Length: 324
Ligand code: BYC
Figure: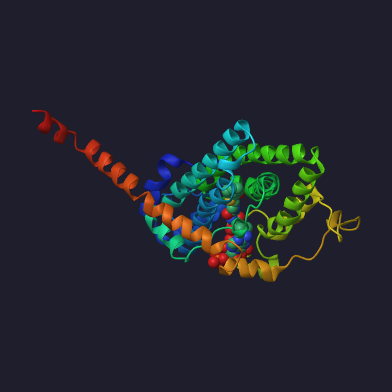
């Protein structure tokens, strides 16, 4: 991937370059499918779009802990509870890798959290739907994590190094998440008529919102063309959505194999619903934001204690003074 990109000298020589040389070098790296690293010169708009996408991605991981966290106390067995706790913890970890990746672009994590808490940055629409039954935990794993994998595997080849590398580990963990969701639904679908109905209902409710996760159709996608040209996005929203439909093939009254296209045609997505949910008007937007702000306030003492500890570690002389 890194080809003949000399990471040891690249930053040093860049500093001496005239801006047009730096821009040319950026274009060459992109054209050669090499990685842009934090110390490389990059256009402001490239930096801005990466901060926007990586921050939204991080926020989605953190907010995404809520719908599943809702079932930790009610998981049907100790084994299911332990697995679910581990999964929700993974999501927190994903958020942290992604905030770290965003910080390499010169923003501060506090600033990004403030943008989330004041509604100036988004998170994925999917987390504004409620988890009404245990089967919803299965549907989130199978469909939501499944859609996330489809969208995120290409991001492992994103042109920005720290984002691409964070995605490698995230995708490995997402694969485990998808399997656990599938296994929950598989178990329910071999259970009592009530369990089967519960599994079907969860899949029915999560299917269309999962398709919306891929974003608006390409013709309405404001950022796709530029992000693709920069090697941030590798495929359009519609192409990834189509691949997910073809892989999952869930019964939908309008689902048909189309031999000419070599893909499944599928029913109409309610784009007004996606717009409403993105605007803040989905079933759970207000609750998700209220709980996120509350968790941030409740965690203030942890951040203060961590800061005080870090400050103390940076000044070992203070401990010596006290000890003497
Ligand atoms: N929801 O020009 P477009 C997970 C916004 S978490 C909300 O196509 P872009 C998990 C878009 O931001 C996985 N907003 O944008 C965690 C833009 O608005 P702004 C989350 C959406 O960026 C816990 C506008 O609409 N995955 O797996 O080129 C538990 C126009 O869209 C949505 C990621 O974050 C949406 N669905 O493409 C379980 C993946 N769609 O910014 C599971 C990383 C679009 O101009 N992100 N918008 O105000 C991406 O790949 C891209 O950002 C998107 C959108 C494909 C989502």
